[in-house]
Image (tube, rainbow, N blue to C red; front, top):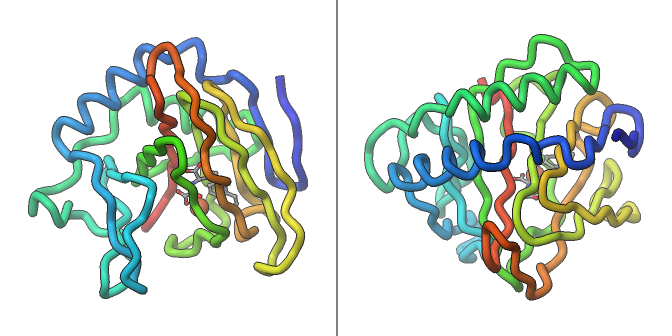
Length: 203
Ligand code: MD3
Ligand code: FE
């Protein structure tokens, strides 16, 4: 069941539900090798969202800036491999939204507890903006803010639930977006947490 938010942005409601157990098992395996951590923004703020990555590249931020890096700065080792169940879901969702041949090489795992938020930003650390980003929401619900091409443009509010998958490409790819502070809630499988997977082609 599919909603088009605008040209290039397609919501696939409940698309990940059929494979939730496989996704949650794979998340645990990644986190065991590359633990979730609260990174610091270049401006010196601690992010309320805890993050880690898997795949060839991971996204990192510290006092020196944002970047994709093949090495986890906390361990000094490469990021864990992207689980097959992740890659397959991302590729198949991209195809369903009209993006053939999406080969993600980075998966950012964001973990929100109640109160955590992500302020409006653009994703522009990737090399090729013709490649979409696929996001998968798991756990407690969140309200996603989908803005325009400028930070001051009015943002739509889109509730995202456990199992929802969204593909962001084309004209939507550089739109400002964020996540409002999560309300207290509990999910039967994830407890008081929301996990969001975002699949990107970084290189
Ligand atoms: C729209 N994460 O990690 S995913 C991020 O729920 C990020 O954790 C949010 O924004 C989260 O960068 C939102 C949905 C998303 C991701 C990338 C986009 C929406 C997007 C890129 C362009 C437009
Ligand atoms: Fe983003």
